[in-house]
Image (cartoon, helix red, strand yellow):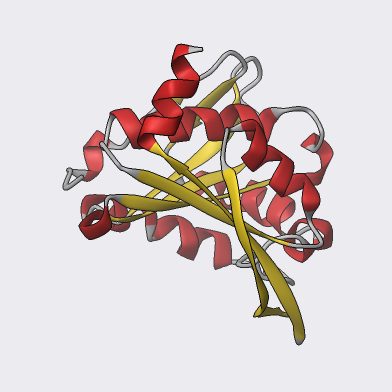
Length: 189
């Protein structure tokens, strides 16, 4: 996946455009990701989300993409260009795999946006960058994220007991995975 930053993917679905983040998105990211409910259900979203943090985060995306290690896309509604959240692949090229991660702003929960965006990114992972495996995990107390993974055809592979700490509390992490041949088979049916 060694690529120039100018080759950043732009993916389209029925309702969404997945595109590179721009510095101008910082304020919107801070408002959406800074919501306690969003931070509480994810591993890596901080709270409080301080001014400047979103812009710093966005500044890492093109460098990570150019190195072949990271694809982070803004999830934007096509009809009104409203930023809804983020989706990413942390690529481990040596193993032909990537860790899928995402968050959606609370006002847009339960609308199918996350599943729609994730399906497009999984397709990108298996077709455009020829990965063998995509995996993801969620805090056990966030079953909605697990439902997204199952809708993608991911298989629950296990629960890592007290595997991580979120805000001084030990958390179980539920792990899902999808192999390229499983995804291809699912596409043919």
